[in-house]
Length: 144
Image (cartoon, rainbow, N blue to C red):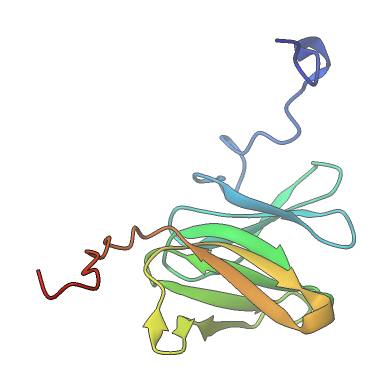
């Protein structure tokens, strides 16, 4: 199998092991309109890494465990949080972080994993990685 990118052309963009703040278990990379790279951390951090890789900033925290991230057209960042079984919204202009959703229609999320924004319909879709128990097929011939 031929690699998509030759290994000798790959390089580390940002190494957060020795940075301050330290990058802890980065998840859910998203890129904003200015080219900055955002990711979540294992204790709820939401980090912004500068577009040129020169620095990192902890912008907010849910005190949870951040998984997937996505931006809407207004540059609000939606963050799936496993610990809180919820989606948070960060206003990247003001820094305000709010609990946005934990499900709908009577169904609560268990492990919200990744958000997708469909701007044309003003919709947020979220995958839930919780395995739903299989229902037994009762068929049409009486109960089992």
